[in-house]
Image (tube, rainbow, N blue to C red; front, side, top):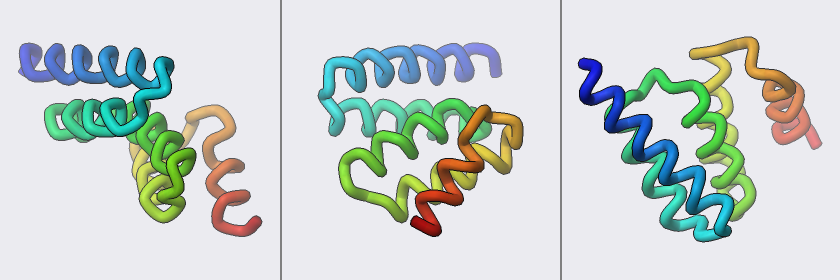
Length: 88
C-alpha cells in the first residue's frame, strides 16, 4: 500500500541520515526495517550493501548488491563494484 511504502521511505531517509553521521549499526537496522516494508527497493539494498561491506560483512554486502542489481540492473557502477568485490 502507499502508506506502507511511505513508511519504508521514512526509514530509508532516517537510515541515510544515520549513515552520514557514521552511526552504522543504527543505519543498518533502519535500512533493514525499510526493506522489511518495501523489499523491492533497489536503492535500499545497494545502500545496505555498502554499509555491510564498509563494516566488514563482505558476503552480506555482496548479497545486497546482487539483490539490488536483480531489481534494477542499471544502478550506475554497482555491477563493476560487485565484480571487483568478488574477484579482487
